[in-house]
Length: 158
Image (cartoon, rainbow, N blue to C red; front, side, top):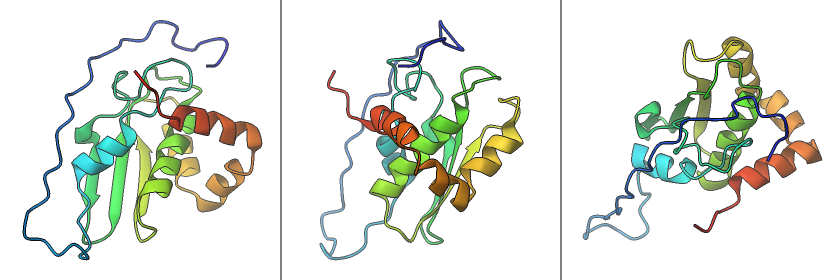
């Protein structure tokens, strides 16, 4: 995907088995369904890494345990772990997570995207950039960046 790899030989982990979502049988079909950790993980687990042909789940950049959901407050927080401390793609990965959730969650949700504490050399700067509406909007006006994000979000047919 990108030339000059920062982490040329990442550790690749096995994907978790997908669990079926079983809705309760006696629910009003017009009622708002709560969103939970598993649903958010299912949305983001297959995002492709910008540098490798692997998903964020396979690289353990994202795990189900790193997702917090408060459905009553309409708040989601994802904490991701770059594969290396000096990952130049951390902001792109965070932007991919944000765009994916913007596209699949109701607009009432506030989404926080964070780098796991102590896992990136410029953690504070990356966190600030990923959670600033104006910076995210400006990034999404860059056609090259949008193309990269769309490529990472494109479904893979394994």
